[in-house]
Length: 420
Image 1 (cartoon, rainbow, N blue to C red):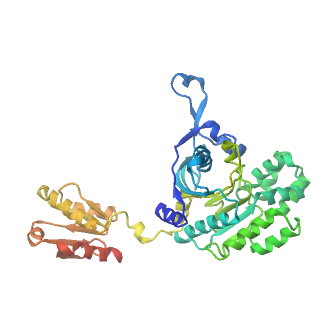
Image 2: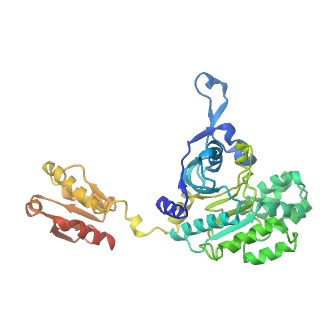
Image 3: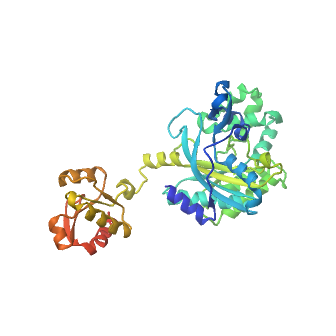
């Protein structure tokens, strides 16, 4: 799966980057909102300061804030438009549940330096191509805009100082439902009548075509509203690329992280609460480190959540289910060690994935081990085969076996593996 993701990201011109597992705690705090701050794994001071109970480092919460720190630190060495991908683990002090982990991999792409809606269109296209290559068909790309959200909150009568709290509550809509969000609003001191108007404003769950949602918004916002123009441009640019038919403008989409400033997005599949990944524009985040704002936009896919869904829905191809080895070379006796390694080297040069059984043992036990590892074929070179410069290939699925010349063994095995 990482190979699929990396391959797509690189075809879109993104370069790889890695950052340390931990950052200075001040780098992370205050970037994710009240919910995020609670989930940061703090690292206590070490050495002579360990008894203080204070933390000066923390495990990274996501890959976006470390990227912003890198951009600020190496601004003079990076190109004007910097596109990077990063596939590394992050840590959150959360309660584990189905598809939710304390340590998990994120697969990020980010484009730095441009505020053009083409950036969002490219990110969305790359993500949709990844989903398609992994075998997802009925997925949707939910799209919204932070400024549209604030506008709808204003229309509903939510006071400006309570906007961020309202968005944190709204972000839980797909997990706790309308009634749950209403209770969240109440607990945060938002008036019941305002709550009702607010939830009515966000009633679109992405079920209608993007053009219909845009027309509805145009009746509520000024015709020159920049956020609406931005949404329309993204939808238009993406119409002829991989996301065509997958984009839905979902006014209830909030994205809880506080650093988003523009378009926000999530990718979701039917019959699944929550998303498989999300992102958006964060033009102010790098400025927290650099002292001046830099346009930036990114998207992150959750590797483990995707694996859980694909496993439950039996989406992995048979070649994955068969295991990581194409052929196992058996070991006839201790005198054949060098010969077994030489045969394995020949087969690997042909592109086959080869394991060598490490000890001389009864063939039955070696076959049983290979079968348990889901290895489809074994290669046997006994005294007779060696005298004839041959290899006996046994197909463990059908039980058939065939002796072939040593020089033809790789081609013969390739043919079997190709049709497994």
